[in-house]
Length: 394
Image (cartoon, rainbow, N blue to C red; front, side):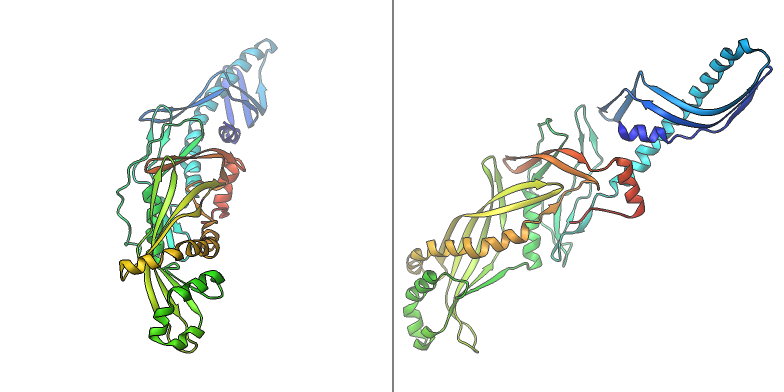
């Protein structure tokens, strides 16, 4: 409503000049000084938005010059001019609103980041897949919502996720995110090479874990070379496949599979591998929205390791389960959370933020509901866009 009032307040009217019988008149410098709108904005299925104005008033200020012969006809001339000005004003309103809707609002929508880089590894694509659909209660827009690898933008994940269903209407806007949204990000980071390998040496390793590793692989070290006992140990973690997300009504989680190598690091020489094992971890993923950024916080919940060589060695690894999980919680998980805490921007124009956010978990997708906060008026946002200013950053 405020935006419409601003647009109508900027209406300009041409100079009115003419004659009516013996009377001559000139009206110029018409300005709207007060505008009181009683309006209703609602969705009209298969048509669009309907903006209806009823019982509203407008106050004008203008310069007039009227030549007449008899004072008693002044009211007649005033009524004639009022009718003429109302007619001209009505002819100006619809074009002004059309301009606001087709031109200015489109300029506002251009501030939405459709396809842009997130960081040096991946980008994100929010392009529309189809025309918006207007129902009796909502305006539905189907965005792609897909991450891609900057090194190979054509190498993308196939979308087999279910389509989210939004049934809530308590908030102004609802953003539905399927498992594909998160999986495409995990896939793109994996293909982009982000931290696929992590080397943890003895300085990053808890002392009890290092001692436990030496005890576990004492026989192996002695068989290879007893002199290796004097050198530090390390663990090399390598993600072997793209992590996958699972979303249920109970929450979201991310499953990761890694190859873990136990190494001895003799100075000045190549590392000596003592063992190779598979590690499977499951992280709880807490999704949150702040402003216009979607963020995830991970917490390691389930963890297991087993040998790639034999079942007997897998039994010998059981004592390592607890210390390794603790090491990951202390050393690795904070590194991941520190990197992803900045989040990723969702498609929202400049000058508009989410407030009063609520996150709901469903089978196969997440729904983020929120109200909108306009930090400035729509006209100010559009003027900033025209001047080249922006507050969008992924």
